[in-house]
Length: 115
Image (tube, rainbow, N blue to C red):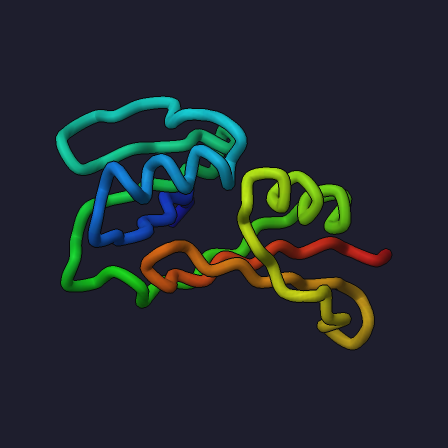
């Protein structure tokens, strides 16, 4: 089986409020809103994040993103009033990780390679 694309689904309780927050997180409005209660950010040809209104599952998701410069990413997020944890060195010293929580408590990790 060959996979072509990854769609990470992030369930949220308050859709419009969450979309505004994710606009700050991604630094842009959603690329598409294919149906009521669903917004998509197309991060690459192979990766899409879907923010989906589903209150019963909100706050139970974790998604990690790789970034080239963790400090710059954290600074940019701070400009949008989005807090992140202090970076931790993980993966036997090969990566740095910082965690952000969206308004529902979904966990978003930013990972920078140190190699």
